[in-house]
Image 1: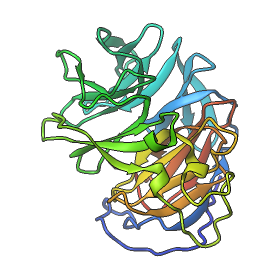
Image 2 (image 1 turned 30 degrees about the vertical axis):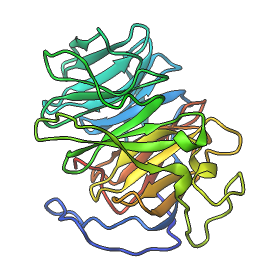
Image 3 (image 1 turned 90 degrees about the horizontal axis):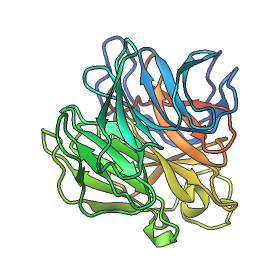
Image 4 (image 1 turned 90 degrees about the vertical axis):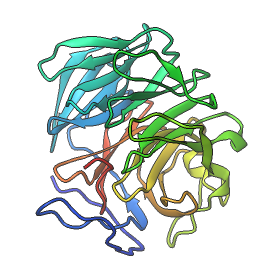
Length: 318
């Protein structure tokens, strides 16, 4: 099945060197439209990650991990009571956050699993793994963002931010991004924590607030709340992803006046460079995948089918 994306305003600026034989990455610009993946079942989904040439989806409603092999094959990979976040570690293992009980689990390619941490893990949500092996995860409602090194004790990052959900790493893995979905509009923001070569985090800071950004893009329809800022488009932040050029992708909802798009914010956090429409009203997870890493997959926290859109830049880590 071909992937369709519609670009209203396009400015293709080559910034990063591509992988051998691949087209160069280009900065996303303008308005794109996502589409439902053919054959997708409805799922109450959360995190996703590309693993072993397929997309793995945490289907909380179905109490399972779903494997999607393009273009249209969906199958149960593993039954899990309450799966939430998914990532892949440097050794190629699947890393999973679970709720009830709250714990961080490693799943090897052969299917065997082990618990990485279950003490002081808070309320684990989405997860990412640094190239050093340090694992980071968000916590909702008040668990803060936490981390653990293999065999070490869990640490809470400072400051302790409430209602954290989406999480991701910059292309060089020198920054950790975390989305906070606090109920008050002023608190809805993406935070960032500096990381050294070992993944040790420094003190976090607000990278950008949703209410401070205005998506001034040609041919973009009015937001649901008729406002000028991103609040009417992404509401309370949930999903977060980063592409290979450093652009940050955010989305969310949980409000009848928001949840209409995925916003793409420039690497400096100062400008909305693109918007992706046609997405679930209540976006939960965002993840890059596909053969070239340029397909953005989108899940919804309600009963939604998997969505996808083809973009000019691959995800960070490809």
